[in-house]
Image (cartoon, rainbow, N blue to C red):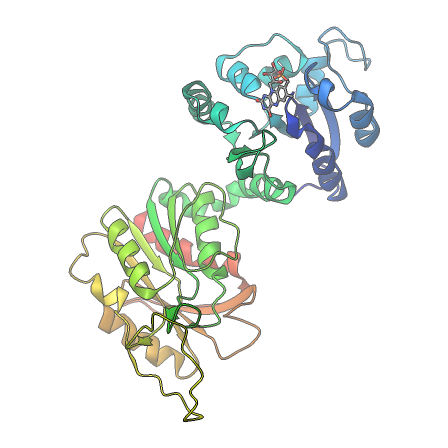
Length: 404
Ligand SMILES: Cc1cc2nc3c(=O)[nH]c(=O)nc-3n(C[C@H](O)[C@H](O)[C@H](O)COP(=O)(O)O)c2cc1C
């Protein structure tokens, strides 16, 4: 995506300015050509010389500075740009952009741009939460500007909160997804749909430190969340894993056990248009939870665990079902299609996505999968081995047809 693209970085005066040096290097490594414009305040954080050297272009800061032979420098740079990245974006530049202010080189060039603009804000949590900043972000989004959510964590001020500049690789992924959004035209009917997704392997505790679980990594559910969010859906992810980074813009509810997952699904089901149950839930849980760590028995070398069935989330929705489109997963190691067909009938789902988890190259805990889609009164659709994001997109395309 980056190869031979003209990327202009608009650098404004925040503490995260130094992080953009590395971000520029990363997009250059992918084959992009980079030019930089800076505000006067940005230069107080990192000098012009640094950006001039890494971009191998003169860096323009003043409207009347003559750094190239172009008669109107801001228009020349705006026309040259394929993708504009405002990073770090201060509260101040967002306010200017939202109001069409053009009183320096950066804001004037941004106003003259027709290329897609990506704003990567970073600031103090209280600034971020202020009504003015949030109001400006809303305006920018309505104007078609892409505004990324900052990360939560330790801020330069020494306390934690939302406002950190995200990891550079996350910034790149965010932009890549949005730029390839044209390829998401088959998912157009999912725009603004409320999609509830479960992910990961649940844990059933025997005692405070031990649990029964499975090899599910959650990657399939997270891939659904990422693709659906990129397609413009409003995504809530109920996650039984904390090992994966939450896709930008997706609301995540963390759970551990089947019972917690079921409560979270029930709490969000009535608002949902689509439910995708990609989590691998435990089928059994211990009959008894021991409040203290189970001690090694002195009398016997055996410990017999008594297990009981966990509640069946899919089945439990049968009576709550209104218009939601419900997708279940069947992870099987044998007789895949027959078992999946049985599940489709028994659980009242609109679709079952069946995957063979006996293979080590697909399914659990790897990046690839191969699935068969089963729907009542429809021929099965087979999707051969692909990256999980591609699988998620193909399954979502089938779902999107039902909403078109
Ligand atoms: C030490 C210091 C750190 C700052 N960090 C930030 C920041 O991270 N985000 C932000 O929006 N403003 C930050 N500011 C405030 C901006 O620098 C200030 O609003 C400035 O007017 C922004 O100018 P610009 O948008 O033209 O670059 C900081 C100011 C100082 C003195």
